[in-house]
Amino acid sequence: MNIDLTEDQRLLLDSIKAFVEQEFMPHEDAVDKAANVDDDLTEQIKKRAIEMGFYAANLPESVGGGGLNHVERTILEREFGKVTHALHEIAARPTELLMACQSDQIETYLKPSVTGERAECFGLTEPGAGSDVMGMQTRARQDGDDWIITGQKHFISSAVNPDFAIVFAATGVEQTPRGERKQVTSFLVDVGTKGFEMVRGPQPVSQRAYRNFELYFDDCRVPASQILGEPGTGLDLANQWLRAGRIWVAAGCCGKLERLLELSTEWAATRQQFGQPIGKFQGTSFKLADMATELLASDLLTFHAARGADADNMRPDDVAMAKLYASEALGRGADNAVQIFGGMGLMEALPIERLWRDARLERIWEGTSEIQRHIISRTLLREHGA
Image (cartoon, rainbow, N blue to C red; front, side):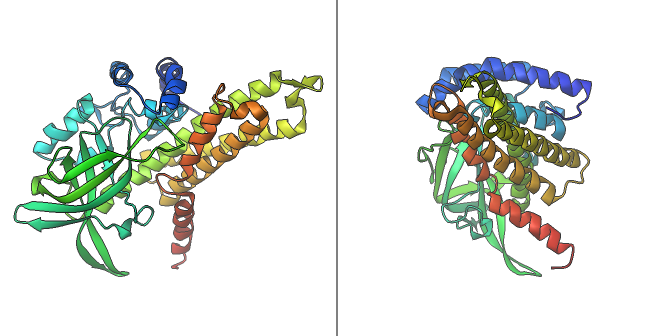
């Protein structure tokens, strides 16, 4: 990693690297083929993550978390990103949105999530409202002291079976200078609540062992005490998650690209064709040069966004640029790696084909590349009043 780090950050990096190599990498091939992580391995990884202080490392020390800042979290996500989400998400980083818990919610949801006793999922995306959040069709209407939720969510991901969902639902309309806008409220809904059904979603080809769920709400009644934050502030909470999440996606892309570069460089230096290493041919060596250049550029953009977040001056386009560039650089790097390995790059005997498949998802979740370009261009134009 060609990024300036403090001595403490270097020590953190070394510790995380060792954890990834010992706890994740020995299992990644098997879980990908099985498209599942069994319960015993899940508990083993979670136990080791708690012992090492990586579990809930993103949450403040005041609630029992590790208290990592954005740069330190970026270091962690970068190394964890070298393997499938199905494994590294078990060493959970509960969503920071749980810091909005109040009163009894702290004991029921926040604290058990920090200790690993409970796990949440983030219920925002819908079949007809992926990138278009304002197209949300899930509704919640007030009925006395309760709210009744009706709607559907899909592509709701989690490394484990969630115990509860943070569900976003339209609860009204407000007038803004740009016209009407939906008011969205977030709710904490326990699995098993009457009217709430959660089922496994379709099997993906990318991140095969990472679980995704479909959530169905049919007149699901929850008390007002289950509102997370304040009524009508759900979009603000969702944006907190999405903006921070894009830094972590970018960091994971950097880690995966670094791994592909290391594997490709070793292969190019040792694989012989026409009496010499294939790395001697420009068709191969230039691909390595492109991968190395784009890795450094991705790292610089990602750590720039993380440092801006720590200084509380991160712009929306900072994180959008990092997520856009790192995810697309990873896509190009993964394709180059397959080309460098040739036929072996598509064989299950090597990790290249899996990394290639897994890389494709990064340009879609937490906001597609098109959404990131929209954010960047919108930020530029607004500075000119457009």
